[in-house]
Length: 175
Image 1 (cartoon, helix red, strand yellow):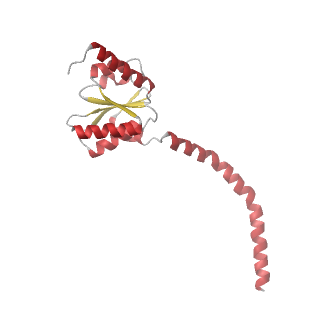
Image 2 (cartoon, helix red, strand yellow):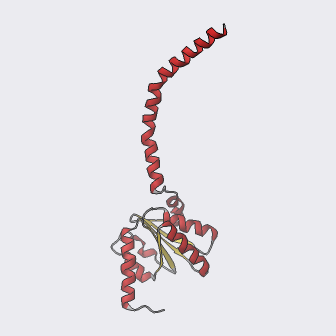
Image 3 (tube, rainbow, N blue to C red):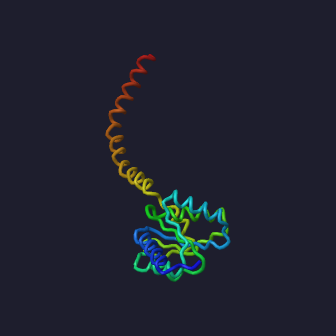
């Protein structure tokens, strides 16, 4: 299907705007995927806040030019679906990685994170990054631990005294 110049400009502007605000991007070859599978992938991407789009490579190269994902331009070859994580850096990797486990037709070709080109094998590492909520809870646990330890340390002499008095009382009652 032939695209008119205005349609091409619109696509480049839309993908460029998403790429400018994205945290990570993945390009995966989708050759041989059925329509039902692609629809399921798009649905999962929408639920995870991932922008998923099939774009011609020439238009994709123009769209990512001037963004942090310009490093991907040399790898945009063949029929690719582009996935951009907008809120969570590992979201696209989780969606495409999980889908690729169940469907061998989807092959991850290019991965980029904050302007750095990674290998396709790094998808697992990128997918294992914590979400924002998980990272906040981990930070709060680390911040809370020293305070909890201080409170337990300060309370221990009083608890030890109470246990000693209780042991003496029990000993006197038993005698």
